[in-house]
Image (cartoon, rainbow, N blue to C red; front, side, top):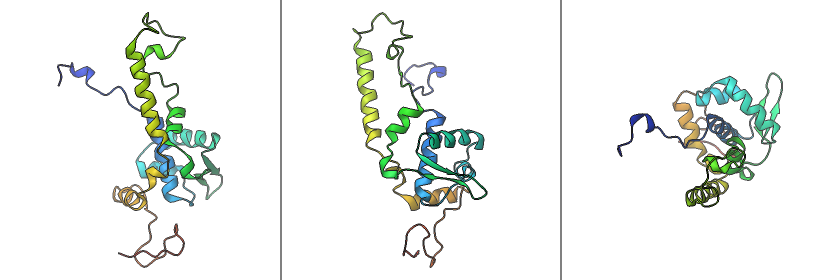
Length: 180
């Protein structure tokens, strides 16, 4: 594969688990809205560590993305409409600082080419383009295929889809009855 040593073939440009967990949490909250969803529900649905999700959920609440409800039937739900939360803003927060190369950080940069290097300018343009695409994508967009996503989660054994059984009213959509 391109004469690259095997130890260097792994992808290095990758979003953190924290970003992934935050986006999965917000997506499930949008899918299940207006229901209250517990951290356990998210952990089970996506087969992720509850302890990691507790940190993510706490920070999502602190930053105003989710409303947390304490108590026996507690959990969380979106604090803002899914249409108003962009994937770009979540990535900027969870991945901050976005320093893809050393010279993006003026405090730690040791590269003597700063200011003259076209590579760093190109990488900055690419990063802006990447974030621009994510800024055009909302949590509502990544939850738009609600039925397919919930069915997939149910098929994987992670979560009750919350979808109505044939002939039952859909608890999430007023006046809609499931038809197979």
